[in-house]
Image (tube, rainbow, N blue to C red):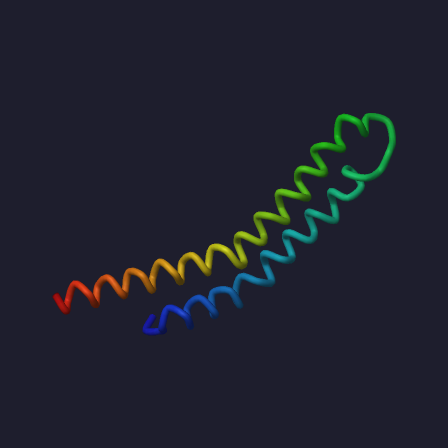
Length: 88
């Protein structure tokens, strides 16, 4: 849309931050009883709750930080390669 890659990444991250955090936090909060409370059948459900909390935490980190960073690096590399090809 005419923005630089850096500006597009910043705007995209701002737009996606709140929805990603809201869905992550609500799901993690819902999994806390399953992961940490004791009771009948807890030995079966506790590993699922812990796994979901860990997986959501890692995937949120990847979504919010890792993906935009890697995208920016690839775009800069692509731009650099295009400049080198044009100059050759």
